[in-house]
Image 1 (spheres, helix red, strand yellow):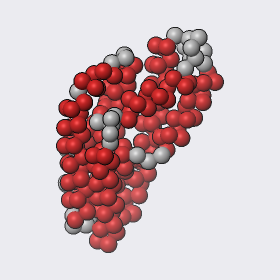
Image 2 (spheres, one colour):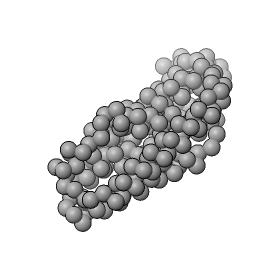
Image 3 (spheres, one colour):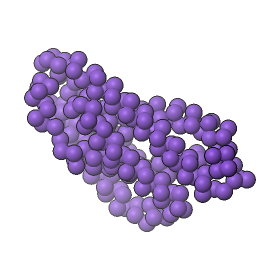
Length: 209
């Protein structure tokens, strides 16, 4: 591996990625909301969508095709606004939803495709990912080594770290979910989930290229 990346730089990059991933953002808010509302498996499906979206963005950046995003900027804006409106709608509906029992909610779990596309939209419509990719990665690359191999290793490392921490948040929210049963606590659960979903939608709407 030392022939591909500088080990010291890679370790520093990994540590920095962990710190950045621990800071809650739109993806984390969405994952927690999904897991808190419908359980860990639902949050996991959302994470799969996030992985696919981030992989596409990283591939575009790694292949030097950031111009593709610029070319499709208007289209991405349409998708971003549509996705933001949808998440705000889901959040508002969750906020006002009647607090059901865990068993009742299991019969209203959203489809796998719906949860997947929620995660995918949040990831793919985040223009900051490419900016982050371009500004953050070069600081941990050794100019004496081939850039291609370093980009692959750093990209895979970052995706593993970020998605691993997303899984941690999803598992934690899934563990807390049974504690929020009953009418009163169920209402609290709905309010928390609603705020997280609406917050994610608002963050998407306010994102700028």
